[in-house]
Image (tube, rainbow, N blue to C red):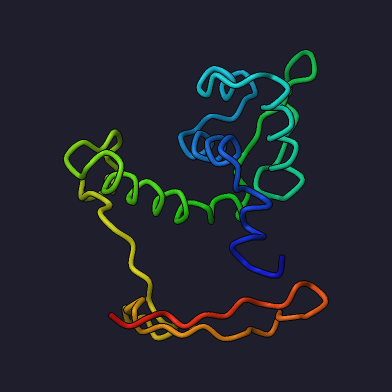
Length: 156
């Protein structure tokens, strides 16, 4: 499907892949650490790690230890998922747990202030109102790749 959201989901959209990326942000890097944190079976974890490496979200680095031991580190592409995970966490805090019951609080180290929201901005850095957006085919629109579904956001 020729859609940015569909293609992102193809690479990192399943439950386990995003949780592995989350844990990598928390500092986990070894197979056994991911396995213990997630309670995931070895074959599923191995498959998801392989796919994340294949898609360039994680890089696999051999450790200088006896045996075949590796660690997995976020690439620049993987680190860019921080915004996606933050948006999902903030949405869940509001709609699943309730703002006063959030299971995780994220604060800026230097100030101690909470990360309380994300703001979409235009190319000049000005905030955008999602109700005033319009969607148009981009330069990557290609009928051979499935075209593009274009919708106008409804003003309310």
